[in-house]
Amino acid sequence: MNPIQPTLDQVISERRELIINIVDDEDRNIGTLQPLTVEHLQCDDIIEKLTNWRNLNMANFLTQFVATPERTNNWLKNVVFKNKGQMLFLIYVGKKVIGHYGFKDLTTDEVLLDNAMRGERYGDPKLLVYAGKALVQWLFVQANVKRIKAEVMIDNIPAIMMNKKIGFQGWKKVPMLKKNINNELRFVFAEERRTSAINMYCYKIYIDKLNGN
Image 1: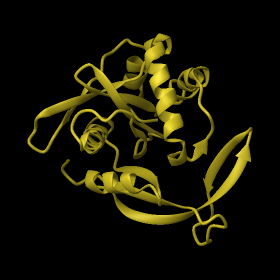
Image 2: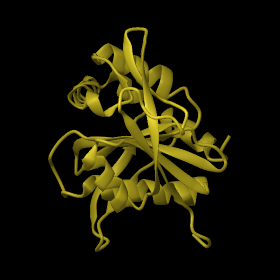
Image 3: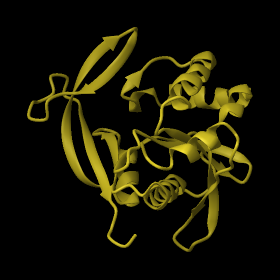
Image 4: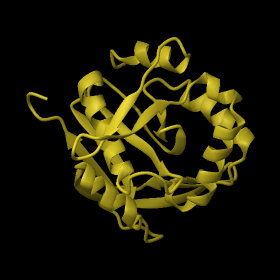
């Protein structure tokens, strides 16, 4: 478990505040990352936004299903808030929520960036790039991980461009398999030396912490 886990628990349970500033290349503040907490379970507007955004972007997820507000609420309560090493941030421009970005599988050495979503066309055009950079920097400094990883579907060109601008490298192409589990369509990783029977691949990428950072 990463030493920062008690802080994450306090933030999720509303016992501690966390705001990460998003800045552009000229160090101007263009937004903030603010964690989803247990209070958001009672916020119908946020739950509805998360639900609608996921349905509109279903093809970019490795697990595909039709989301509902109830299912989104249960996912937050029973997965995001209960799993150690996981947190999802809302992206704010002023008081307007325009998307989200998160991480999971946080250990003492590494973490997986996850759930990058721009739901509203508002704010700086490169807002998600800067949000990703802010989250990467925060994880390197606060969680002190050595490596930050991500996974990007090979046909998701906007996500590929975004992650290259954030600084991800490696770009290892991995074949995918398709499974139907509990009425959900899931794409899972196959053996890396195989070809994909469904002609679907995912890039595994990473950013390593530089010495002295």
